Amino acid sequence: MYGTYYKRNKKARQKLFSSFIPILFLLIVGGIVGGTLIKSSDKKENDNIVNQNSIQNNQINTENQNLIQNKNEVNKSDESSQNIDNEPKNEQRNETNSNSSVSQVVFDDTVAFIGDSRTQGLILYNGLKKVQDYSYIGLAVDTAVTKKFIKNSDGEEITLLEDMKNKNIKSVYIMLGVNELGWSYPQVFKVKYKELIEEIKKVKPNCKIYIQSIIPMTKSKSDSDKIFNNKNVTEFNKLIQEVAKEENVTYLDVQSALVDNQGYLPEDASTDGIHLDVEYCEKWLDYLKNNS
View 1 (cartoon, helix red, strand yellow):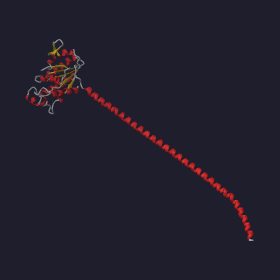
View 2 (cartoon, rainbow, N blue to C red; view 1 turned 135 degrees about the vertical axis):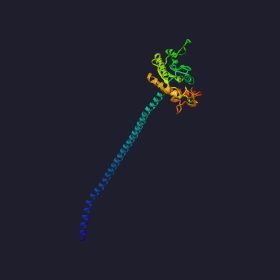
View 3 (cartoon, rainbow, N blue to C red; view 1 turned 120 degrees about the vertical axis):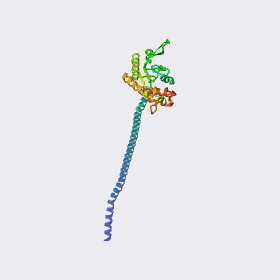
């Protein structure tokens, strides 16, 4: 009985084994194929990741290059803007220097000086050789019109007005008044001064006329002299300002550039308290250059 059972079971096992082999084979083949597919899929996924990383890196590099380029362009733009900002400043500075140099008068033969011995010192000490020199010792507002002290080309003595007719004079600087400080009637000084200016306008209607303030004395001179003192200078300078206003000519306050804080000519500026030395004649000319 046991033998018969064993034989039956053996046949059953053989039949079961025979049916299992194909299944096992399929499982093995399926595993191999599945593994291959998985590897292929992994490889594709890895390739995709690498490609994506590469693309991202390229994008990053491109963005960095763009940032660098933009930064450089911004820097160039800033530099350009700074240069543009600087250029007007440089131009403005050049214009200022140019205007400063143009504002100073050139004292050539188109410029005339009318005055007394003080004006002679101004011309001499500053080497103004080209100007029209109408200065004379003791010259006053009345004698300036009538006195013949200028020699023409023929050697004949004529008045300054007669000489001015034949000269290309564009500006006239007048310094008169110190010799008139002793006049009993100061208003006569004003009348005569106006007459001189009107006569100049007749011979040179387009000429620019400057009338200068009388330069004060030193304190020692002013305190010791009844005529040449600063009280009289102040009175006559007021009359000169009135003349300038009424005749529509330019008043130059020369004394402001030469006196000390008390209104006197410094003691070291003159040997006699009236006439200026070289240094103060140069200061006088500098004032004329900067205020004409």
